[in-house]
Length: 436
Ligand code: PFF
Ligand code: NA
Image (cartoon, rainbow, N blue to C red; front, side, top):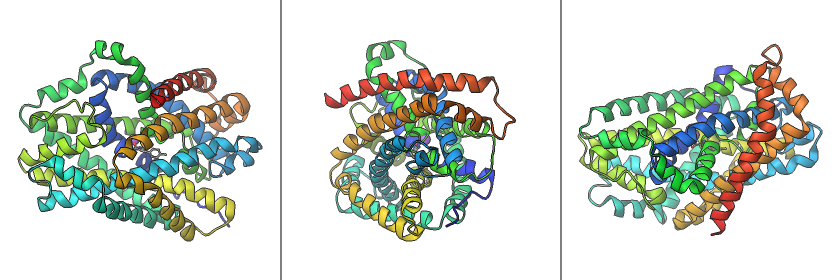
């Protein structure tokens, strides 16, 4: 069977950006920032994106393009089959993350409907409860998974690439419009200030929690640690400049996360909603944003646009995760794409059911998959490249750029020393917090 490839370089970049830009930027980033001390968290997060995120993205790109295989099969292809477990950690994370990602995607679909039908008029907390778990949550989780499976079953070019080319630019345009609108609202000052002016004391007093949360977010937002970027770069076919591509992808993802905060925080501040989602967790942003849309001029229209943008962003991320597991099954068992996609989507739907029935699972799944599995996945992948596969990796990184430059030496050293140490510390802190 001939393996799929991207039709164009832009198609690959947009699909990778689509994977990166998602609920992580627009929903998770603001609520984590709100929980973790505002702008201090933003600064730590940005540093970790540059120092750890970018190098690890290159680790995945090198593995994917070199092997032209899924994250598990890649290691056999590269001549190191005993490292297969590295890809398996990622695949496991993929099942868990997509299962709850889809449940939250289902909430977003319900908020779109509600924005246009007056659904969250009145008590937005009560509306959230009725949205987040139970029958509605299950039905919309199924609808969201069906959309994801529909796109993936169409294949790399006709499904993923086409969808990304249409959807990613739409998300960016809508978000810019929303940020401009937010800036025209009154009383937004405290929102911007909370978001943009760092308070070092907050960080100092809570570094033990802020650090792993920021590292987890850096990984999650860039779709790292579970082999999605291995899968996407395995469809590259010809040699391109991986360094350029990764810089573009990281820059756009970071821009969107920052921009998302310039939408949500002024929205909340101008409508007198709490900026600190203290202990409110995942749902707080939905509840307080809906309350802000309730009172804002043209709020239901603005809310509708916001949630449409969020749903589109979530879809392009969700289908990248499904693609990763589909690529494994298609490569390994020689099963056709469509049945593989439908079967895996059904399994992931079932794994998501506990979350759709009881909100408490969301936090547990999220912390375990994100702060532990993704970080462990990234750690093992980096150890492999840094210590086992370094010279081949450098050769691969030099392809399409006429050889290696000064950056490459920096990169391999960061991958060897800085990334493993940073991820080990993060993992230790995360496990300690998890066990508590
Ligand atoms: N990067 C996505 C986001 O920020 O929403 C989430 C995600 C997608 C995480 C794919 C991991 C992944 F492999
Ligand atoms: Na992201």
